Length: 535
Image 1 (tube, rainbow, N blue to C red):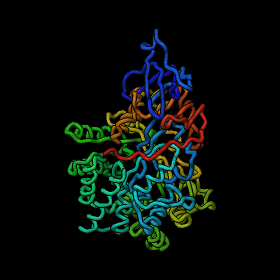
Image 2: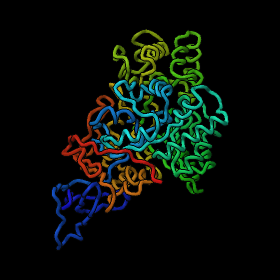
Image 3: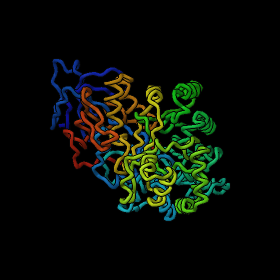
Image 4: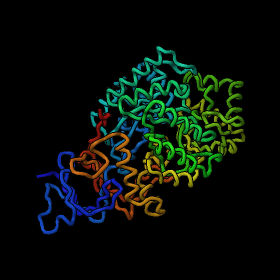
């Protein structure tokens, strides 16, 4: 007898088609039978060792977080309710060009310092891997949800070229190509870049194109955090479209937003650009989070020249008064490339997390608010934070526009991604609320998307981008990564004031046919594994 029958569920199967009522039978991690209500009339209904009454609940495929920063959190926190409670059953890691494989001893330490604001310093992690395959093997020991991995281009460049702003030599480019190929052979699904983060931003288009040619050979995709989301954003999108078409590589645009005052109301221009490329045969998708503020590290705002050489070089420049004044001028007057070419507005920069406990009083306040309270200039406050927190400060950047958010989420190649940084005492609520916020706010309350459309955006579309042949739909033979939610009550509990409040209306989540959330509570099940690239 099979393990589980989910009885009388309203199945929204991820295809975008209409829902239907059915009994769904799960056994050994797979959906083995779907008996629709009409077909069940007059015949014996399926039975199993366990029966779950799903009356009033929607059954859908598990949600895929196409842009996650849980690279260490999955290892550090077996509970991982931040994502599991949202109905997320698969996360894509290795984002924005910086993560922890492939590395050697030198670059591991450098990367740990560089993205401590995203993931913490990692002092509580046993870094017993160096290659992409070894990292995926580490995930296979058991984690809360499944995870796929993108090879981080910035980490590859740090390993081969270092943190300097220069072109790679032919030999170095050959070595980078080999590392990308090796990571793809070991199971990575593609390549990511952070082209406003060092050292990835130092790569010219020709270098990126050559790496994308390797990705294309393996059927992966390129996922850039491109060179600007502010001034020159459209040109930056155009650059990525042209680059990947030249390389013959699929393109997935990370957190595809149009931010800052210069881009208010300009989402239709981006969508027109993408539609033209799609109609001409380009393979493009994108992800967004359903909020207006962004989230990054405070050090990421600095101009690229100030970040050259790695974290210790940055701290040395900040400690020098004359150099610090040059940095301030680029930030406040010129518009640093790290701040997307837009002069920084300190009233939009809210401190969301610090690594140094003595600095906790800054959290929840903008840089300008803290500066005004201390009677000093905002740059003085920001500089002190960077030095005293040793670049570990995370921020919310209140620079988005609701009309752009809604327009982009309606697009035919849109998928969902949280871009959730789980670290800090006041993280962005998207880390804990992205997927129920889509379903509760943008579907039920605003009607921006229908329920069936939205579920397709969060399930089958990302599964197709990842080329997963047995995930993303409620179909016989598919993996039993499933979520049951109440369409009348599902909502994000997380807010900017209380960002770690769990969602409501999601009582059950299954990974590989096993309950990781049951009756609204996290179980002790660790059914997640690495999801490797399909050859």
